[in-house]
Length: 187
Image (tube, rainbow, N blue to C red; front, side, top):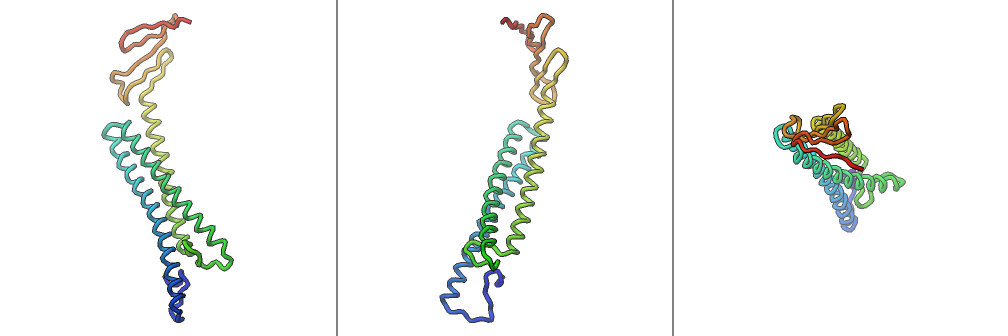
């Protein structure tokens, strides 16, 4: 896109001006590539978090949920770095009174519009995935803890298989139901 770099093909430029424009274009392309690489890292991390979430329905929930959360953290870090690059570019562009893209590492208005849309899309996906992961974690916690009027049961998963149940008898003694071990609380 010749207009985003201020090149008018109808004008003849001296070699020094051409060289300066090419150097400026190279810096701008480098900034765009760095931004897109960070966005790409965020997308890859989101895709990996999706893969772990799919595994959670068939396998070990604890390790899969942790891996999914770690990938979401990676996506958040990558998109935060991309947002910083974008804001830096926006600030540089707005500091020029003519609004042209003539600063090193600066993006044109159309490039900024595309970059903004990319960031919003990734940030929206991260918000949804964080919400989904939080809901799944709460569901697992809810399925593992059962509270009744006289006991609290903690199991390893949604099905109470070999879990630990603590209850209090009328005298205030705590009973460990799953192994029939009694311990009293003497203070």
